[in-house]
Amino acid sequence: MMQGKNPFLLRSFCLLWTIFSVFFTGIGHAHAECAYRYNQRTSVVQGHKVMVEIYQPEGRKTFPLVLMLHGSAGALRVQPGVEPASDNFGEKMLTRACFTVIFPHYLEALGVESLLTQEEMHARSQQLLVAVSQLLDEAEALPSVRRRPVFLFGQSLGGYLSVSLALNRTEIAAISEISGGLDGSFLPTRKKLPPLLVSHGEDDRNVPAAEGKRLAGVWRDHGGVASERYYKGQTHYFSADILREIERNTVQFFTYRHQE
Image 1 (cartoon, rainbow, N blue to C red):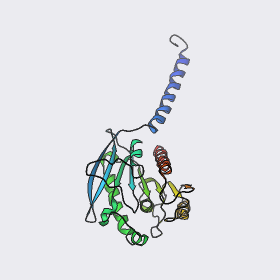
Image 2 (tube, helix red, strand yellow):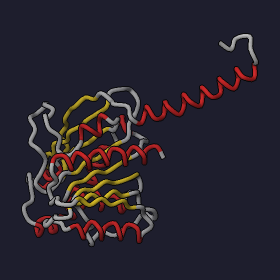
Image 3 (cartoon, rainbow, N blue to C red):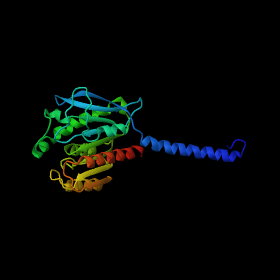
Image 4 (cartoon, one colour):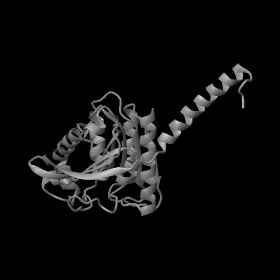
């Protein structure tokens, strides 16, 4: 349409088109949906075999890593080599958003599938932290995630463990925790804490919402950025629609932090 017309207008049009393309390509990439493949592997941690589920986006490039840590009730049981039909708390959503998701059944490192009391969890907290730290090391060694950002997403006991890892491991880019808090026996050693997203039910009697608020306060006291969301009428275990909202919030939170 501009052929044979003003060359300045043509150059201006090309420049504007380039800016437009780059801008909207970036947005499109942020909302792209990745196909993925599912597999399992076994790690040996503290002398025990631990099932590790891997959700890997398709493609030859590398992807950001999300280590997910379930609560004290344990992970959903899986059949060998078979992808579960249901999510625990968002692993498939995160993978479709182009994150490599590692979901270890980390309680198996203690030879158990669940922990029933807070006393037992506290007594074995150091063992648990060593176990999930090893599992994170192994996840970071995967070729598909090398030199990419590392995120943590934990629920309940897994939230506590994710926070403890993020206090000291400088490669953690951000953390989202559900119904968790701060284990007072672990203090930060890194100079700058990563961004934190706290999600908690206002009616949680297992881990009161005050624990989430205390965690966010300590985070800010040590120079970190903390976002908090508290859900009226929700207990320790969220309704399906609220849990799905938290999962979406986490995808957006990690995506934004990945693009910074």
